[in-house]
Image (cartoon, rainbow, N blue to C red; front, side):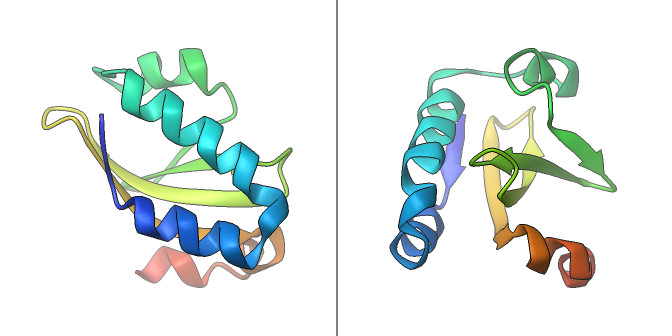
Length: 96
């Protein structure tokens, strides 16, 4: 999959250094696989959830959340947000 954009991962990791390892791991897995659908994605990310048109990943032992729009047919992953668990719970990300 083509992840757009790595810059968001780097910016979040700079702000929250303890997330860097988990984000790098997520990125490597996403780059090295071509998922045909959500079911295939769940094979590698069993805690991933579909929320409306977005996919939510638990990062760093459920400490952070990565929200992405996945376009399986185009093999693209658009990172919409990376949030702390507290920011995620506020729900503001659902409107973007």
